[in-house]
Amino acid sequence: MTATLHIEHPVRDFDAWKRVFDSFHDFRVEHDVRSVRVGRKVDAASHVAIDLVFDSQDAAAAFHRVLQEQVWSRQQATDLLAGGPSAVIHNLVEDTTNSP
Image 1 (cartoon, rainbow, N blue to C red):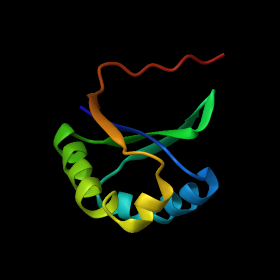
Image 2: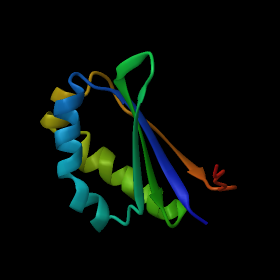
Image 3: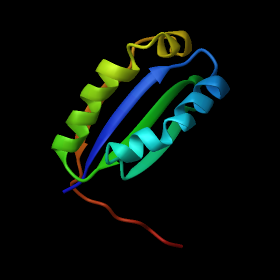
């Protein structure tokens, strides 16, 4: 069963944040992230939502701990984020795709 680590946080400059986020691609792969989705609130473009998909809840929880200890505590993160991140883990219950 897959699990999703859903993260939301405001950023000071989306383009600068996205460049740094993209530079962590290999880091995410090394920590077993299977897929990534990045979105922005429609009415608040400086608010980012990220979904990181893992093979298990344990893998998602382990990566969340890594983010807290090794990434979000860095000065670079403090400079880019306009507020603290919030995160929650969801287990996949259903996955359907509607095709036209």
